[in-house]
Structures are given as structure tokens and as C-alpha cells.
Image (tube, rainbow, N blue to C red):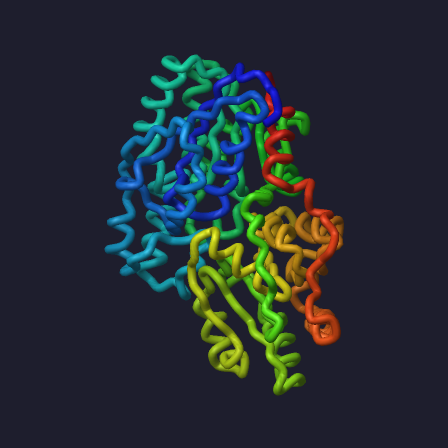
Amino acid sequence: MTNYPMTKKVLIITYYWPPSGGAGVQRWVKFVKYLPDFGFEPIVLTVDPQYASYPVIDKSLVNEIPQDLKVYHTKSNEPFKFYKKVSGKSDIPHAGFANESEAGLMQKFSRFIRGNFFIPDARKGWNKFAFSKAKQLISENGISHLITTSPPHSTQLIGLKLKNVLNINWLADLRDPWTDIYYYDQLYHTAPAKKIDKGFERKVLTNADQILVVSDAIKKQFLTKSPSLTENKFIVIPNGYDEDDFSDRQIADAERFIITYTGTLAANYNIGTFLKAVEKLSEEIAGKKIALRFVGVLAENYKQLIENTSLGKITEFVGHVDHKASIQYLLKSTILFLAIPDVANNEGVLTGKLFEYLAAKKPILGVGPVNGDAAKIIKECNAGEMFGYDDQDSIYNYLKDLFSKWIKQGNIDLQHNNHQDYSRKTLTKKLVSSIKK
């Protein structure tokens, strides 16, 4: 432990917290783990799981919460029971509606209701409860700093109100774009609804003391929202990996060349040419063992595409697993597949899984913007290659080259440690050094 004086208390308001799963949860579970090393005592305010609407559950993350951490819960009032009745879906929608097939009439109607009657999002029913509790905690604990993290972006309105009432030092962490998110148009906002939403976004950006984002490209998007915004208001800290999660190193499968993808993969990720390249390699090396594995939520259109081709014989659909199991799948793989959604302004999409891919020390094959932030980090760490969506020949040649190396060497794990700047502890130190004192 670094001997930093424990002088400041920070209240972290986050909707997503264990037993909720996902990269956003892990981001703040890990920050909270290391903040005390650098002189901050974190206090967490979140929603009571009995009232929450979580797309993903990961109970294993509960075990990662420090035992002495103060965590407070409040109830919420949310409309997802209505959504389930209207849409006919039993699951809460994932980001980008990855767990939904092509939207039918009732699903489109429910999205229209969500986009126009619940602004900025359908979890804003938590705000009044969270605001009241936050105000109490700040007063009773002598809290000097406030952090709100989103999505859901309605959480930022809690910070906005607390800033106006208490004038507390407020840092707003926006893990994703707001009105520029790639699935925004799928919510069918009317012009007045868009105006209101953009107004909320602008007020948060201009009133927060600091804005924390995960990539330079997202920072550039937000800078366009108001002429009063300047670069020095922004802190760029990506997601990362926790060294402790990789202490139990597994030996990769020596009998199969395993290509693994973990996480959510929606219909607009455009992985068709990648699948064709894998299919071509698989057919060429008939008799050799090659496997394609998807761990997490896979869009139905891609699942059907795979099952209707020869890839169906070599593909494993694992479904959602807890965080610890997900890492074990990474470590037992030969190479890792990364996909960035094929949408406008995707250069700043910096998925949290990238950093755990780096820590797994497996070659990465990425499909997405070749000049985007993810591509730059992969290149910086000498960890693999990023290819354009339609560059099937290059994807195939890279796959074939990796497969040939595997046949000769038996193990093609990366031997360097170029990823260490992205450890959670290093990133927490950067966060603390950036926070206005």
C-alpha cells in the first residue's frame, strides 16, 4: 500500500453495481478497490437490486467489493414491467438491443415510448430516491467530492442537481456517448425529445467540474456540444485490467486452435467477412482442429448465419458467464477476436474487453476502424492487428499466418508486457492525480 494520507471522502453514484454485471460495473468496482491506496475513501450509492433493471447479472462480482466499503442502496421506480408486456420480451434490453432480433411493430412502439416519454432513459425513476440519499450522505460524512457514472445517463442528472444545490466538487464519468451513441436512432426520438435530451447532455457537460471519458474520440464528440467547453475540463482514462484477475494463469488448449470472442455482439458489428475468412481457413485445413467460440450475447442473425454454414460444426455458443469464468475462457484460447460496431463515429469505441484481451497476452484479431482508438492501442502494445470490415483477404492471411505459427510452435502467446500502463491500479493513480483537489 502506498502511504497516502486518507484525507478526502468521495461519493460515487452508480446505477450499475454488483450483482449487476458488465464492463461499467467492473470499471468502478476496480476504481473503488484502489482509491484508498491514493488517499480517497470511496462511499458508494446505488440502486437496491430488488428494484433495479439489470440486463446482465454477475453475482461473482459481489466477492470483489472490499469488505470495509460503505455501500448504500435506495429503491427505484422503473417501467420495465410495462416494456416486457408491450414487447413480449422477458429480458431487459442490452446495449444496442443485442439480445433482440429484428424489431417488430410492438418492439418499435416500446422503443418509441422509451425514447420520447423517458428522457434521457427509463431508469430515471431512481433519481429522486438517489438524490435524497446522496444529499444526506454528503452532509453526514463530510464528503468533499462527488462522482456520477453513466450510462444510464439519467444518473448524471442526480449530479447536476447536487451541484446546483450543494456546489460540491463534481466529476461526471460518461463511459459512452450520450446523444451520439450508435443505437440512438433506434429509439425513434421526435424532434422535441431530441432537443430535451441534448439540453440535459449540454447542462451536465457545462456544469460538471470535470468530465471523465474512456477515449479521445469521445472527448472530441463532447467538445462539440457547447462552445464553452475546453479540453482541460476532460480527463481520458480508458477501462483496464486488474492484475489480480490474471494471477491464475491457465495453459492454452494445445490440441485446438481456439478463436474466442467475449461479451456482447450486436447485429451492427459487421463480422460477416471475418466469419467467411474463418470458414475458408477451416475448410482448407480439413482434419486440423480449429474452433470458434462466442462467450456472451450474440445477435440472432449471426448465430443463424453460423449455424447455416460449415462454421456450425466448429462453433461453440457459450452464452453469458461470470467475470472470472470469462477470463478463464480468454486464457485457454489461442487468439482473441475483437469487433467494433460498424456505425458512425465509431473511432472512439473502446470496449472494456480490449484491456483484458491485452492482459491475457493472446494475439488479437480486430475488425473495426483501422485508425480508431482501439486499433491504436493494439498497435501500441504490439498485440495484434485491426482490419477493415470488408478486408476479407487480409483477415484470412492473418489467420492463416497465426495458425501456421501455432502448428510449428504449439503456443503463440505474447511474451512481452506492453499492456501494463492499463492496469487498474495505474489507471486509478492517474484518476486521483487528475481530480481537482
